[in-house]
Image (cartoon, rainbow, N blue to C red; front, side, top):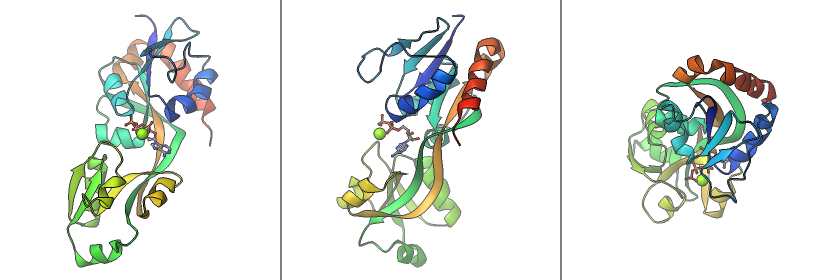
Length: 214
Ligand code: ATP
Ligand code: MG
């Protein structure tokens, strides 16, 4: 294949990537929300998109099944970033990684007491690092979605999750007690592809860089 493949996930990352693609002269031939196609052509013969689960994007790029990808910092931290070149923060899909607890729970007090906390999260690595650095003892419970439910049914004392408006927390009688880090999505590049296909890849990377919004 003489062209390049870009791995994207549906939803907010795809939507917020469209203007960046446009800046590189790339227009998708289908809308992944309505199409069932997993490989989407573009107006350019040498560029195609593959639509994968957000947390699978780094894996496709790591193994060279895609040359480029766009993935949240949350996803990259869990993946580890092996084999990936991360040249650009695209400043899209912005949110915050937070610790949240039920409204009646005194988190500060529990931490001060040295209590062992049960924390439910999709982000095991990030959570382990955060609580480890704080010296808080935690039992981490891996979930794949709807973390907000866990404290409401006694599965966990706290959650680590992504928050943007905070409306989902509020709707479930939870509140954020700690910010772990700001999150946005990054461009990731397969390191071998960057050498082999630099003629096609570099202009796309440069166009993305020039189109990033502050
Ligand atoms: P799936 O829904 O398939 O389980 P996901 O929840 O990780 O996967 P999205 O919800 O589309 O997929 O999130 C994709 C990325 O967008 C996340 O990895 C994160 O970087 C970012 N993101 C997640 N939630 C928000 C949010 N509320 N606001 C802004 N960006 C977010
Ligand atoms: Mg989701």
